[in-house]
Image 1: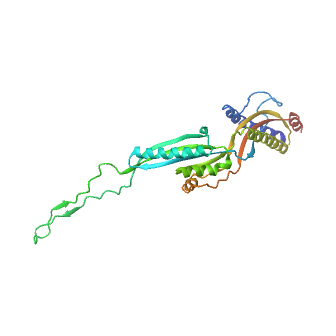
Image 2: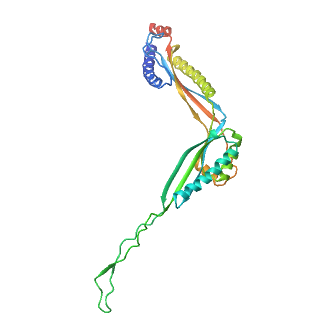
Image 3: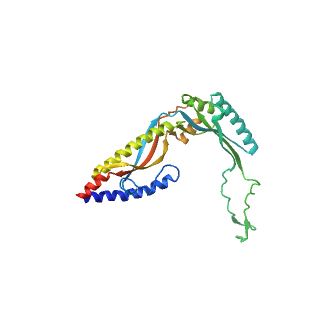
Length: 290
C-alpha cells in the first residue's frame, strides 16, 4: 500500500505539470494533450520531468555598434560635422570588407544640452548712504541682479550609430581599428554569435530528451515502480549564451584607435523539454496486491 500511495502522489504532481505544459504549448513551443487514455487509463497518471540539454560551439559572426558624435553651437553645424565623419567611417568599414547588407543604421539623434548654470544670486538689501554725521540711515536699496541671458547657453549634440555585422572573425580587430581611425568616437559593445543555430538546437534537444529519460527512470526506481511509455512532450525554447564585451570598456578603447584585442570565446545553446511518462501498470498492480 505504501508504494501505491507513492504512485498516486506522482500522479497528482504530474497533473500540475501537465497544466503548465499545455499552457506552454499554447504559445507554439510544444504539445500537450489532456484526457487521452494511456497505459493506466488516464492522462493524470504518470510522472513528468523537465530537463535541459546544452550544446557548445565557436561563434562565426560578430555584431557591434559603431558611430560618431558631434557637438556645436548650432544644430546644422553639429549635423554637418556628424554626417561628414559618418561618411568617412562607413567608407572605412566597406574598405575593410564589410558588405552593404551588413551595415544598418539603428540610432540617429539630435538633442540640445544646456551648459551648467550656477543658481541665481539672491536679492540683497543694503543700507542707503546718508549725509555725513547724520547717523545711520534707515532707507534700503536693492542690489540689482545681472540680467538673464536672452537664450539658454548650451550646445547641440548629434549622434549617428550603425550596427555592423562582421562575418570574418579574424578581422574583428582590424575592422574596429579602421572605424576608429576614420573618426568613429562611439563603439558600443560586441556580440559573438552563431549565424545558424539549428544544428546546435538539435544537439541540445537530443541531450535534453536523454536527460529527461534518465531523470524519469531514477524517480520511478526510487518510488519502486517501473517507467512506461511517453504520453506527451513539451518542447521548450533555446537560449544563446555567448561572450559579450562590456560597452563601457569598448568606448574607452575606441578613443585609442588602432587594432583592439578581442577574444571570441565560446557560445552555449540551452534547450529545455518537459516529458510526461506513464507508469507501468503491472508494477502498480503488483504493489496493490502487497
